[in-house]
Length: 467
Image (cartoon, rainbow, N blue to C red):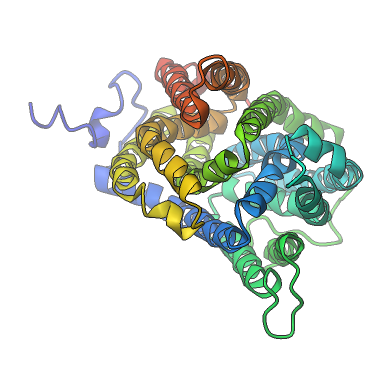
């Protein structure tokens, strides 16, 4: 009886009718998962903490500076939405080819993806630079934030094409389970970012005091560092995804169609996601500069849970795809559930942390009493959001690994693009719930999303998708 109730046991994760062979022991399965996930977790958590440090440095200039930099976040992600979507296809297809043992096909897919990333990235860089001012106005920038927000967005967007290249290479490396490379790339980039934040914002040593412009410059320089390491990883002699100038770099319509077929559905997901976030961010911006600053501070804590779950989801995506390629859907189910068990366990710890740290955490970023009070209130709500958020991220990663990105896109449309902004608007304005109402909308969004994704995963239709 006790054994049957052990939800962490791999023996209880797979129905006997689905089994296709020997099932790894619980210890072995969790070890395989964490071996791939741990570098990604370290990477993502490091990014979150370094991002917190950067925000704290900007916060010394006042709530207006925090709000100005925060306003650029969703527009920047919106410009990258198409590329992020195609990268979902890159990861899913390369993980499947790795499982099938077809290294040449995996390398060919990578080459096409790199070329596609450069084309998209250069286009986005040009558009973001030209449209910086109207985009910031559309984001809700006020008279006290429009100047620094536009400046930061324009400077940081100059390196979007390098961000595109880096993210595509990292997506491919994650597909083969090489999360160590992406960890080194992103941690290095973020160390460069926070270092130049320290040097340029307030002007230390020989460097000039640049304020918000310094923060944008630091981000651009970190992108250069990260892209250099990402490209270098493809030229190592022992690299699974090794490339060389002498390879066939001609555009291959069949491969491009494969990437677009899988990633194309995710384009819809990413666009829905980013539009939903953009509208939601605009609603909060309308509440006021202090409310938006408090929102940015609470979001830093939210990033901790998000990035941990994202690290585990990266491993889940890779293992689901590889095991489907090896004709072991039973192990794909098992690893999806292993990832969820890990994420939910951690979310309970983070829930407690949110309750305990809700008053002292905002002090790391500002000494504005009103901002601290607002942030503490919504961090309490964040504690209840985290289990739903982490579960949803893992289930989405599992479905993406199988190629079932259309359903994930549908979920994002309902929960993020429609449910969250509509509820936020109603709660913030007609009902007058302010920032608390906006975060209650996130709670409903995350709850709905996690339920829809879990039901889809449990039904198992994703196991029959061909890539």
